[in-house]
Image (cartoon, rainbow, N blue to C red):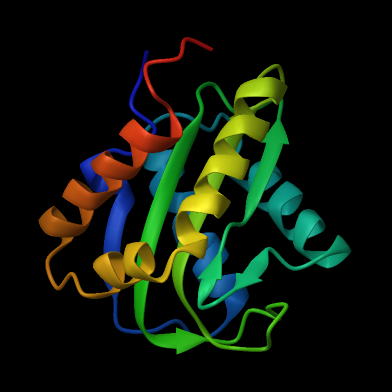
Length: 157
């Protein structure tokens, strides 16, 4: 089973000019790992999902995601945005943690399980604080690995 998080998918950035810049950046990271056949198509799917309803779930967290035929393996890109950014979140607060899920078309059950588990994990203030307090990408990746153990406990897809 492939890792959901990879070191090159976990970044700390100062800020983004816009939500679209953030989404494009995360899609590019995912594309660089080889899990997206057509990054532009996947980005369009993510933006389409955002138009229906923002994935800014509140408390400084957003989980943009899309399921698409062009995704070869389930992956998550994680970005900690130091300045926070407008994401049309449910609570209208700026977003600091963005988890982008790239999901293969056939992975519906695993996708729903992971999305639910990730949302539940991030509802806990201490868990969010652990991520927000990291200043090095290696340390943030370490926490991402811990999250993966919790949200995907040895289950095969």
